[in-house]
Length: 320
Ligand code: FAD
Image (cartoon, rainbow, N blue to C red; front, side, top):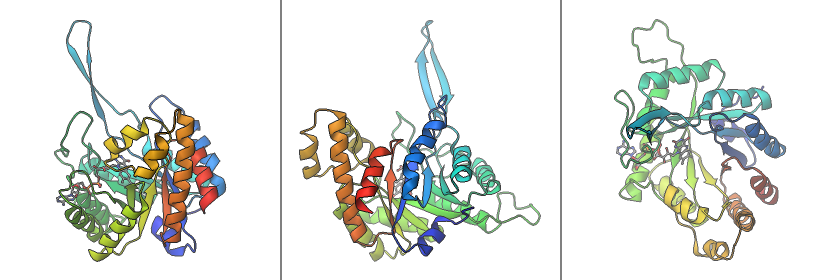
């Protein structure tokens, strides 16, 4: 059974890693779709697989009597269970995401204990975005405001420090912790310098490596990596990329992820009339990006699949 953590895998690997991220299925959908996406990519021997986490959402619907009904639902539950199912089915390291937003410290501790009991020793620690329809991130009353605090809680647990100081002989955990970095700056940060200073807080708190937000211009990643080095960040920095797949990505990606689509890519995308044509452009651009990154000593490439894997398979085949 593969019991290595991401940090151990990076340290032991002689070639750049291939890793990818999947979303849990929407409530009511089967896990089989996830297995199909993984089956398509197993031939490329992924070093580990990430699973995103999704907080509760509030929906407001107008009833026939004119009153508004408020419902709190989680559309994509099951991150930890899914990660465990995949770990034992495929004998692969899994990395569930853990969020500050929507969770109290107590709930986070319980989730970490659950992972620990399941033999999962990796997490990607994240703050989470503000809930849809709101602009500012508001932490739970007993929750974390920034990810460096969440990292600190996980490190505390690794040192046997649980929230209840009265526990007798508490068992330490051994989580390897990843955090997010932003080659085009996190959208709330006033400038890149302060964003990288905040990234360093996460590393100083105990993060073992950084995975970046997607980007479409490798130069932005290399410039960001240089700035991180200058700021004294020494942990591995893994670039994250996502191939474009649909016509509406052109508007959606910059708006959702606060990134630029380079002129040259836009030029190709503007010629496309169908999603199939966009997918082909995405595969070509993703292959060029991957080749360029692999030439410049990255520890690996992390692919955002958003549930699709055929395009990722073609990129990996052409570039690794
Ligand atoms: P933080 O590191 O807390 O930073 C948030 C902002 O606060 C930044 O502007 C930063 O500069 C600033 N800041 C940080 N610390 C401090 C401090 N101590 N004092 C003052 N300012 C500070 N979202 C999900 O909901 N689920 C997921 O599964 C998920 N997976 C992701 C995976 C990756 C690889 C990435 C890159 C993002 C993912 N996201 C996910 C999105 C992420 O939650 C958002 O980008 C979120 O807005 C920021 O998260 P963070 O952990 O980078 O926050």
